Length: 96
Image: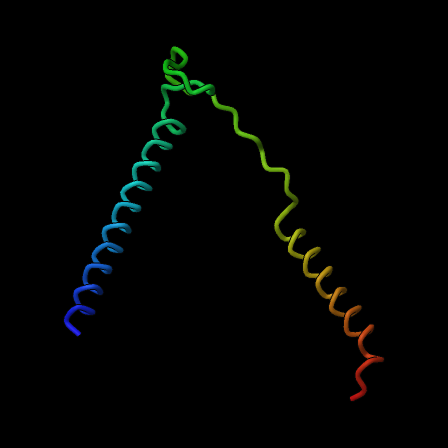
């Protein structure tokens, strides 16, 4: 019984250490991405030194999606039609 408790304590300690190391690694990755992508003194190619004004030479794409309400309405109509067709097709199989 004492050996089992010792093994469980060591295993849980290893898991906690692994989780802490993983969180630290992710934190460092986020910090690195923030420094590379959000910094004002970098060009779009990632090299140091920006324009004279200190602005980044980064172009963001505009989203090409429809209006949110139209997209939701189209999706809702497609789902209703799908279920209507599904139940109409299976109505002959099951008699209530």
